Image (tube, rainbow, N blue to C red; front, side, top):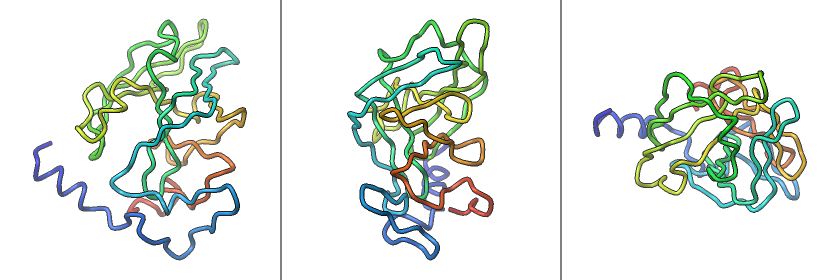
Length: 182
């Protein structure tokens, strides 16, 4: 993607976290609204216990995750590579492109003979603003069992996005029907 195309993609977002739109839920005590997250996204260190499992097998565990926070999306958790069992990863197929982070590559996640294709992704060479997640891995909670401090999270709708919805996050969220312009 050339610089003009990249700037056009970044400029296409009209909702940038400056104000909650009508219909956005009001967060309660201890909650966050995805409508308060900025665009461009930011990265925040998260010291809570993050775990990823497949069929009950521990695939990853850390207290050194990084959350990417972006307007209208539940946080995406990125785990340091040393916290992930590399023996449970298999190269995946295809790539995707984020106008903020760059090109992602995918991994299958395996526990024994059970493998889930393209269940994790990483940015090997992210854009300069996102180098703090270089080599970190993110996991789809609709394909794996993902936990924040013991709470199993639910997946962001839409199949493409990898946000983790916990009880502390309120929306509505990008990915749900009618949200393609968010």
